[in-house]
Amino acid sequence: MDQRELVERARRGDHDAFAHLVEASISRLEAVARLILRDPELARDAVQDAYIRAWRDLPSLRDPDRIDHWLHRLTVNASLDVVRRRRRRPIEVDLAPMVSPMVADESRHVADRDTLERGFRHLRPEQRAILVLHYYLGLPASALAETLQIPQGTAQSRLYRALSDLRVALEADARSAGSFRQEVVA
Amino acid sequence: MNRFDALERDLTAWFDETAMPRRPDYTTEIIESAVALPQRRWMAVERWFPMNVVEFRRRTFPPFPWRTAAVVIALLVLLVAGLVYVGSRPRLPPPFGLAGNGLVAYAKDGDIFTVDPASGVRRWVTSGDDIDELPRWSLDGTRLAFLRGTQLTPADGTRPLRRVVIVDRERNVLAASVSIDSIDPDAFAWSPDGRYIAIGGRGLFVVDTVDGGLRTLDVAYQGLDFYWRPGHPSELLFRGGAADGEGLVLVDVDRPGSARLVAEDGGDYLRPNGWTPDGRRIVYTLLDAGVDSTGPARIRVLDLTTEAFVDIDAGYADVSNDGTRLLAVDHAGRPCIASTEGGPCVPIADAALGHEGTWAGGTFWAPDDRSILVAAAAPDDLTLLDPAGDITGASPSWMADGAESWQRVAP
Image (cartoon, rainbow over all chains, first blue to last red; front, side, top):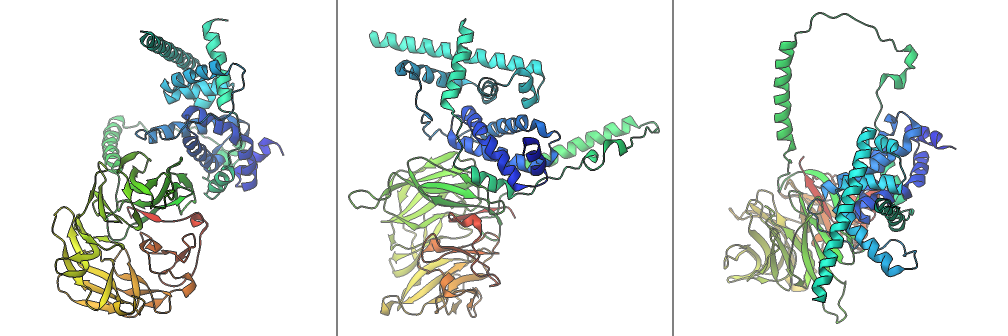
């Protein structure tokens, strides 16, 4: 059974068809939420919200072929909603590495990853989302526009701005690390 | 490759490494939660008819009264804005009396969860290495308090140290107390206005929910459960001693030295069971002190103002939210319902579904009083009872993992 038929059946209330759609997409959507939120628990909440919304609103999905874009949009929106809801919640959960490092030069790699992590956390959730959609899912600007429901030009400029802000954050981080080293030496 | 390109490359690699796709272990739970909800119906006309049979006619209309319409629209905008403002303010339930049923909180494997009985949707409230347990909703349903410890039982055999942690509905941590030695998990109650949480253990403690401050009351607390007085935000009823004897003691936690005996043991051993929601009558169980408190129990409903009382031939009462009924245990061990005005206690299920009546967390009425949650012999053995006795022993799937505190919401 192809995806289109699964969507059609799920739209008519078929639980099994919906379960197949979830199984086919949840790994990807959970990773997207995890990257945006940097917290597996919050990602779980976001993914749950996204699929509940998907099930409830499936009958309103006009084009079954757009299901992937639609699910991406629901996941991004659910992730941003989770961020808004948890405004004052302190970070209490350790963000343990989810996979083992895969490069030989481990010390340098971990340092790079930590730097990226810090820089990425400086971005607004909306900026994280567009970077994840583009650099993780590989969505081109046209698909970003469709997923985020914004004009393509706006999507391109937001992507450029997010990347620029990340670069600024990384450079600031590097300067901070340099001054720290100088203090230690002195 | 310039620096910008390098950043893009690094970002892609980092994403790939830190978010390797995996099938979450909660996938099945998400599917079940989602499909348990109804789907929205799509009402666009082309959903039901082929577009080529839907006819759109061009019509002519009389001149539109734009000025009048603008005034009407402006008034409507003002009206809607006012309604939105009023509607945006959260409606809260009263601290006592009937309320609507909200989320049910429970602890499992050291974490706190909530489940929505209407949809079955579960959510994590806490996780991590700490042992979190005993979630209790505030009476207005806006906050959740629980105990947090680092281990279940210390290696030296002493009782574990635990803190009281208070979170709001969005899981923001609002306050946390210092560690408390030896907490009785049955003795844990929010004050009517939500300012305090009383905790029993080696002593009677009061936690300030605003800043987590902890103090020990200077009273002769003798263990067991206790009950805040409705309408009196700082008065607490507990079993203990006062200058004039032992029995049930009422203390104003904000007034040192205010403890006074309101019901004396005499030949019985008294155990507090609660208040009627008007804060006038106390409900307690009288046990025959002469036979190690194992003789037939009686329930007494005592008016503190007039000292009038009624006795009911059962024990271990749990007062309904509206204050008209008591869930109790009859002498055959069956859960039974009696009126707070007196009369027989009518069984609603057989003894196997009854609670033992020995711990306060064993039963609680749903906020709307339409069902009673009973924990029987084993803490995980949960049953939902109908106070009318029409349904006995229902165990809905939403309570499969636990149910310890039912959130009150605006009716």
